[in-house]
Length: 442
Image (cartoon, rainbow, N blue to C red):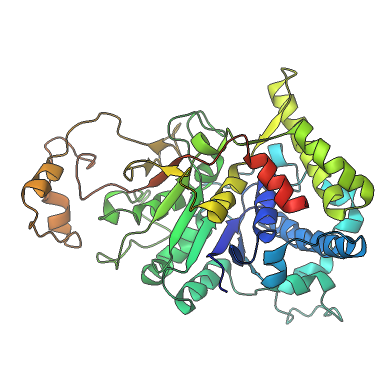
């Protein structure tokens, strides 16, 4: 039986990214298939992110063998049923300066786990899995055994993404983007028609009604490449040109979208507003992980190192002596993919016009929403004349049909602006940590 959901995870591992990957790979094969892991820069440089993905599979190979020898339930059904592609993507943002979050995640992205446990880190020969052998270097005799758990690709990630979307039936692949949106934006720019075959794009990013986590108003992923985020969000609009980022200094790294596109993108957003309250508390984690670590679990030993490092970092930031917790930003998107039929997942009543600031000195990456609650004349016109025929692909029609004097940015237009499906409630802030830990470790 085919899985309910088939996903591409675009990620920049990082601590909570690794937890998200573990949750996805430990899912039931009836519920989820990870078709591809698309690696991008973000929390740390690209090669460090890639190393963390490869190390994860290295540890999982050891963990599966340990569980089998110990007579325990093996778990990781999705990983054992399917073999995800791993592809390497962008090294830097489209136009912004490169930004890292190693101040939080540690220099290697996982709080020194590779130095702490060299036996759980892959030898540097893993790099040859993703490069052509025509460089004059000596090829390794055999690929590492853990590479049997995934398919390394030598094709750049956004092209691999497009290949999958082209070859698979329309509306069968969801992209779960939990890092900067550069890879996703590159795919959308190169072939918008193929990209729009995607079922849904689930994005962890932004801060809508609360403060940011990298600046007072911006969340890290969207701040790291605000132009990419703006371009991807624009595909949700009836008129993408109305929310595309401005071209600065007379040039853009990517072309505009065609005037006529086959359909609008369905984009489901998980901003800090919904992700931050879903926490994994230190005491709960330690209580669960210590028995497994003592019994010899390689995965418990590996994860404990970077999780304790993370808890210590959060404690140093807060400094108030309270029990610390890690907000499960990225894993929440995977929980949604596993349980989205649950009516407790609640989006906003209708898609919101959320736009990304790309050029503000202090506001880059900010998610801007019109809170004025002013009337949109175009909505009334449409209700009065249900036979009104419009052609959004016609630039003149799209931009003048419901123009409001003084509304130069189109906030009051029904033809302009984005259409973002923002999630505002989940099946439970207090239950998710248990779901995450029990799914991965039991």
